[in-house]
Image (cartoon, rainbow, N blue to C red; front, side):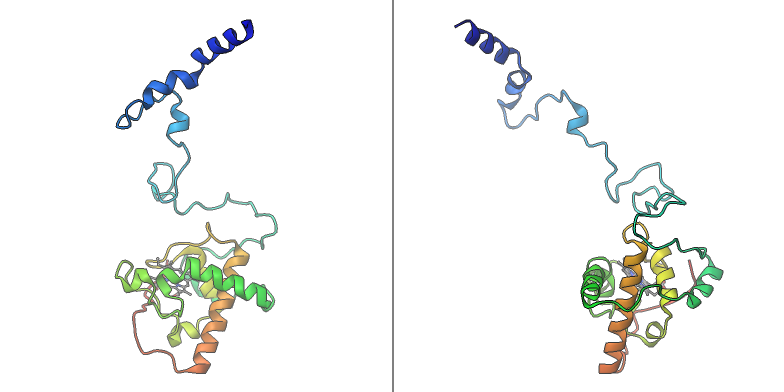
Length: 207
Ligand code: HEC
């Protein structure tokens, strides 16, 4: 008998009971008694902030001098016109992709790149066809079919024109895998038909 009285008292003073009145009207959000639970303090992707260089949580580069476990060594060419020119000589460090890796590279391309470049790499992705991102490179054009893998890696790493950097989102290995995939798809398409004549791609300047 005594025990159940104590239990009843405990229930009365428990926080669960205290916040119950907050639920009486579903038009009122109730009282916030633990603000850190209610409002996330985490940095949201693409949300504005005053900490990062761009003011947006986008180019969140890995800490300088660190290498992610299992990743390739850092890419050392600088993000300037000299680095861009020299990147043509950088060789893809990966051996030819296994069928499983090629499938993974295609998946990564379709997630990260096809939104602009299109699954067929003809610059007909939803963002570019819808006009949201102008001047997307049509990777089926000769200038991109001839583009060295190192230059592709450089541009995907640092970004170029309206394309952002993919260094924060994709590991170096994943970026090289995607470059291999782009090259093999370009070669397959070039073998099947002459490159498309559409010119939605530009390649002006470097970044
Ligand atoms: C937001 C749209 C967008 C996304 C997403 C995007 N790109 Fe691009 N990409 C562009 C634009 C725009 C250009 C043309 C840049 C220029 O030359 O001004 C471009 C250019 C390129 C080039 C040519 C670079 C050069 O040096 O001229 C390559 C290669 C490329 N993209 C590959 C990729 C890959 C691989 C991905 C995915 C990891 C990707 N892009 C994701 C918009 C995008």
